[in-house]
Length: 255
Image (cartoon, rainbow, N blue to C red; front, side, top):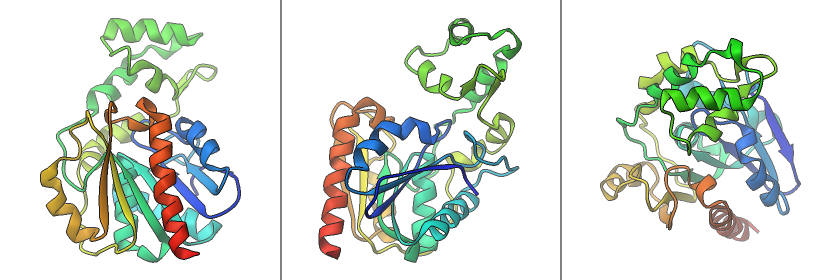
């Protein structure tokens, strides 16, 4: 089973992070949302402290989320960002009874050319044997030309003490075509759905709506001004507020 954190009480919300992320990345937002609900944040497979597998496809990852939800009590609201968003979509379409509502962070059910293979190769190129503190890794990233804005995000997965990454980089690299792709989704999820995007991101485009609507007929769309693809990091307060308004409206209808 995936590693997860579980805080708060009330209606359950499951958070699934994106590629190279972890439950830890969502700690502040999870804590804030836990004032009115139970928030479960997972480390996805091959990330953080969750088990390592030879696959990282969406059907398998959706199965991981289904296992958590079934174990802790279904249904749950599900929030997924990027890779986690595609996983959440796959789960909702294939096992809709497990999903009370759906928030998709800056991703569409399409094949992308946004490969992150260069970041896999960068992390693999770091000489971990010479790392004694985070600044050593930063120095190597500078030499390798890694965007300073991206470095803190990657470094959250660096285990300095054990001189390793909390990422299964070999599998993530091998599975990159599956990660930037999407499986054939032949079902429909008719529950409340919010596609929440960064206004400065190009991951969710107007032309994607004709692909989204048949799968998620009740989908609504919103953008956060000033946010890019990592919208929850760029504008955490605005992201939290948008998620809270949506989730509160879902709960009000169920009351």
